[in-house]
Amino acid sequence: MRFQDIPGLDEVKNKLIEAVKVDHVAHAQLFLGAEGSANLPMALAFATYLNCENKQENDACGECSSCTKQAKHIHPDVHFVFPTAATPKIKREDATSEKFLKEWREYLLKSPYGNVSDWSFHFGWENKQLLIPRQESRNIITNLSLKAFEGKYKVMLIWLPELMNSNAANGILKVLEEPPEKTIFLMVSNDENKLLTTIRSRVQLMKIPSFTDENILSTVSKAEGVSTERAQEITYLAEGNMREALHLVQGGQDAMGVQFKQWMRLCFTYDFQALVKMADEFQSGGKEFQKGLLNTGSKVMRDTLIHQYGVSELERIPDTEKDFVANFGKVFNAEKITEVVPKIEEANYHIERNANPKILFLDLSLAIAQIARSKK
Image (cartoon, rainbow, N blue to C red; front, side, top):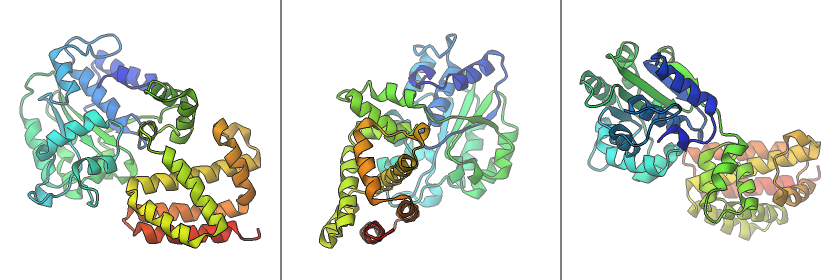
C-alpha cells in the first residue's frame, strides 16, 4: 500500500511525509477514522514510506526490496497485532496475531477498507467476539526488543486497539511511552473513546477524515461494469464510507435496495404472510446484509424527512431515487418517520448483539406497518 493507492486526503499524506523529511516522526501515533475510512490504508502506506529505500518526493518508490515486501505485508520489521478469537485447536488466551498472519495478509490484500466483521467472516469467526488477548502484550515487548532486520524503523501496527484486553493494554504502557530506538507504534482505531485514557495520552492523534463524494465517485467509476448513473447512486449510498462503496460495486446493495422498497410496500399493505416470508429471507441473508438493510432504511427515512422540509442544501438523493422518496413521503410524514427511525436503530443494535433475525424483522415489520397505516 502506497499513498497513491488512497484517493484524496492530500493534507494527511503531506503531514506524514513532512514528518519523515524533517526527521520528526512521533514514536506512537493513533490513526483515528470512522469505519470505511482510510485509517488502516494510511497507516500501511506510512509504514511503507518509512522504510522505503528510495523515497520519492510524495510517496514511496514502490520498487525497492522494502516496498516489494510491504506490498505483500511480509516485511520482517513490520509487525501486526489485530483482534482474534479461539479456534478448535487454539485456546482464547493463546490466540495471538502471529498464529493467523497468513490469513491476515490475505485479508489485507483483499479488504484494506474492511471492518472487524469482514475480518471475522474471512477467517470463519462470524459468531465469536474478537479481541486482542493479554498474551499479545508480551509478544509486542519481545518483538520490539529485537534489532531491525532490514529497515530503518521497526513498526508495530495495532489494528483496533479498542478491542484490547485491559491487561494487554496495560501491559504495553511502558514500551509505548519509551519504545526502543527507531521503533514506531501505529495504532488504527475507529473509536478513541473506547481506548484506555493511559493509551490515548501516550499517542499522537492523526485524524483521518471520511472520503469525500468526489473520492468515492472517482474510485467506483473505474470499476468494470459500473455505469455513470450507478456510480452516482453508490456515492450517495456510501456517504464517504469506502468499504460500503466497494461492497456496492460488487452488487451488495442492488438487491438490498429493491428488497427495502418491497418490504415497505408489504408493511403498508399489511400482508402478514408475505412479511413472515420476507423475515425468513432477511434471516438467510446474514448479519452484514441485515445491518446494511437497516442502514438503508435509516438513510431513506432521513432523506425523506429532509425532502419534506425542503432543505435542498442537505439533499443527497440521486435522480433515480427522487420519485421513490417523494412517493415514500406520502405514506411516511415527519411524525411517522420520527417514530420509525428509533425502532430501526434499536433493531440494528440488537442485530449487532446476535438477536434472532427472523423474530426481530417480523416484529419490526409489524411495528412499521402499524405506524404506516395510522392516521397521523
